[in-house]
Length: 411
Image (cartoon, rainbow, N blue to C red):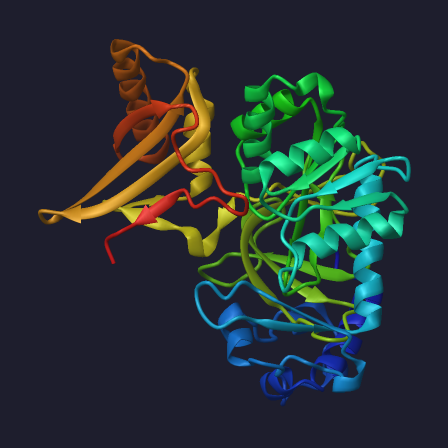
């Protein structure tokens, strides 16, 4: 993303505002905004990370008086103390505007009926999808997660045309609709999917079984929530709303900017956020910038669909493995479904990695051949050989939220 004079001015204002918070007041105590005159100056500023934000619990990130806070959201807190994010009314309005822009990019109009399945409450997902839909002026169906029978009934009775969901729940719904033979009663035409990365095989299954065009939506609780970027009909990366944020892509090991077009970790600085502004926040999401203008005509820059997370990396027998690598393996083998599970144990002094994958193949000999093929492709693409186990379609667990696919039992 280009570092312009306008961006520099917005970053200076953001830093001045961020320093009103307890957290950034300490982190940037020796930094004066006017001292930042170049991109190089900006790149010398310290990073902030999720652990830092957790340490600011409960309201150490707030840069406004309590009377100006109209809503609280937070990260899940499943792996530690939750990160509390306060929002002003302007933050809510800006988020709604960005989200409505996402719907428009996906070709959603006021005539659509938007079926919202992500969770509500402190999580930003459900209410973010709803805010954008209402800002757009479309009919909103705020189902929330769970109760698949009711989801499908309402989808049919109300004629839902747009499904919003995690990829895991979209797949669960697609499989259930296929199983019941009611695809002809479903009027969905678009699917807007977020919160977790998903491979090409899963994408193809959802698109085919639901009969929809699919769009990747991006966001994180610390930076508004979902809706800060989305893919377009060209299916060539996600456009980022850079009038509200500035992003960098860095090498997660050296913490230096990567060369143009190379993969690295996404770092975000907000430009207009009031309640909890961010300065050089490490998302740990791995991506790359896509250079050149998009054929869709949008001038907003693009990043690639997420590769994975720098903190999701696991090491087995000296080989580094990301979920995206596993997706690539499964995509390249005919007869293998999108769903898999990896279990890693340390037994008898050595690491054991077992890869379970779903398939429609039922014959014992055919499954054995498929297991051998998957192991060989895994070895050639990833660098290590797992124990492979073919299981039937639907045998691995499905989730209404994010699906955990790698279980490391060594620690």
